[in-house]
Image (cartoon, rainbow, N blue to C red; front, side, top):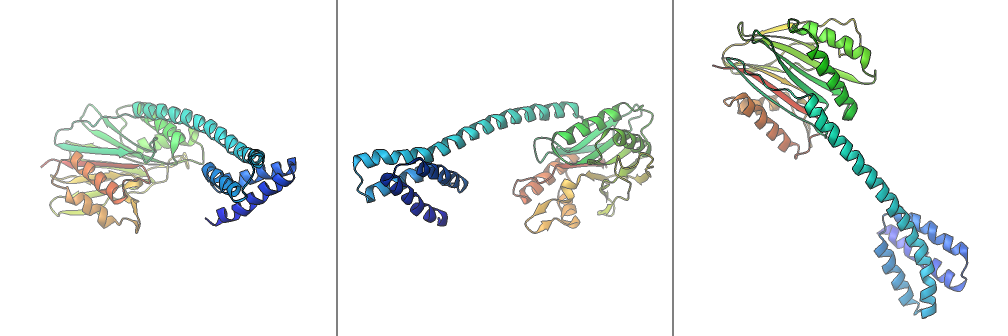
Length: 335
């Protein structure tokens, strides 16, 4: 190591000077050297080994060896202080980790949702956080007419603030009357809640849709969130779902346009977060065609197996290191 080569003569100079003229100024030089050693990650055992070799080269007397320990002690004191600081930071880190684990468990409880059973519809969903706290959110709402509402949202931000924002979204949705499930109205109401309660530096994208099993139609609206894909079973083709709208919380007067899609036997609605479309490899983001190919590979399987297998493939593609929260939902009309 180049730095180590610079340290040896400096340390030798301090020791030899101190053995010839024992004064506190040279001890202070040992303290200064200690800071540089720690900064450049020179280990204590390396210093002790260097100290030993210098004393052997000098053929030092027993008295000189004892005196040289004054310098070694000054250097080691720096390591001792650094170690105590490290232990203090580690204690704080463990306490913070424990608090985050509690918060993550609480988030799972607060944001927990169950996949509803709808006649003629197969639903699969998976949501995996990149860190302990999930910045993605999905939720199912089933009404008395067997219509099912599906919400998928993403906070542009991570950690506890994102989790708190998602909790607010969920409980705001739960407070809406069951008769008001039309997507445009839902997003309009949520937009006003977010605009009044969320810090302006945080942004929330969301897509909300309602599947009507009697008409086999999917109505949806989007607030800055990528709507996803639609799979035509008869054509065996994927197409992008239309949809655009302003992010939640930007302008409380925003109106959200509703879109409609007829769903035939075997057709699929694919909803996702940007952690899916922006899956990154060494070559960059995966292309739309690659993502569609992953889904198409498992098209014959039940919806839950499709989302699980696609997640495993994309996780493997990223060498098992998610860079963003991952949420994928599939609604598949049964044949």
